[in-house]
Image (cartoon, rainbow, N blue to C red; front, top):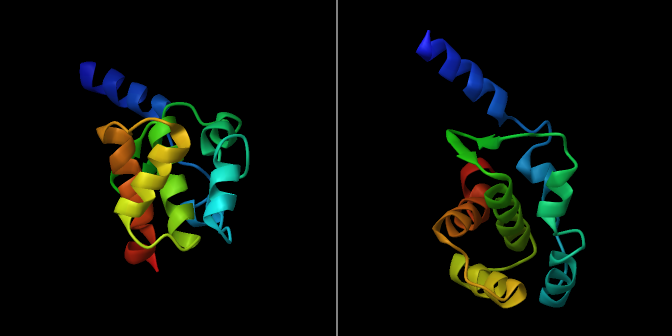
Length: 121
């Protein structure tokens, strides 16, 4: 019975977004555009995901992400699509824009999103 309740709880809290990461990610033409669009714009995925109707976690492959971590995943993918060359460069830019260093979960989400194109393209 406990296992059944746990399974039902897990199914209730885990959602799979109907859009793929590649569909949600955006390609921009310059670092200035990335900076402008990150807070309140096209790359403000936290705000975009607030309205997608998903409660709980976002699944990508075998990994589950919180909304904030998945927003960072999408930001990392968008940075890569926009021409940022390395994860280190993307982390530095994210830190500059947000004014704080990412915790280990946000950093993992950004790295996973940045590497999406290597895994699925």
